[in-house]
Amino acid sequence: MNQNKNFRTGLLYDLTLYLFYFMASSFLFYISIALPILWLIFLESSLMNIIIIGLIFPGVSALVSTSIKHKESKNEIGFKVLEKFIDGYKKNFKDTVKFSFFYAAIIFSVLFNIVFYDGEIPIFVTVSLSILIALSTLIVTYMTLIGAKFKFRTRDLFRLSFYYIIMRFKITIGVLGIYLLAFWAFSSIAGFGLFLLVSPLIYIITIYSYPILEDVYANFVETGEETGSSDKVKEIEDE
Image (cartoon, rainbow, N blue to C red; front, side):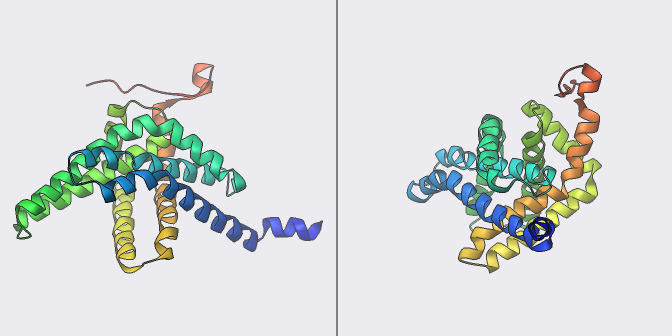
């Protein structure tokens, strides 16, 4: 009995749970995006691709939601990964698709500009497009993070995301750094390694950005103690 208890609290046990979580969540993520990816591969390029790319993001949101629950359960999700992933996918599907179209449209506009300049892009255009991609990526990242935990209106998610990009600038710089390292890793690693990279990447970004969720809860959520009922988000007034 003591040996079993020691195993369940030891380093090997924790590493085993992490490995299972990353493999299981990666598998579920790829299953969730399989159909949109196949559409992108076999369909001709058109504006319809914006809609198809938008259908990939609920899988990302589900992975973020599962990562949050994994952290809050202190690595004790275990075999409930499937249940948590499906729950996050269904709960956030509609809202995630809404703002993912915004991101997909920006990516398409950037690609259009690259094609338009036929590879000879002026410096100022390169800088402008780089800033646009970085800013939109951060906004969508924070919208996905906050939306995976709290139920805000889409426009409020956008406002909060922009707010935290500025107010939590150290986290913002760190997230950008993680994305740059991930870009290098994805361009350097092939085969099965790519399969295992997605879930750890989302997990690292989620855990690193978790203080933002704590701040949202402290400042933009009415707790049950305040309302006499369950927690609920505060509506952000128009200025």
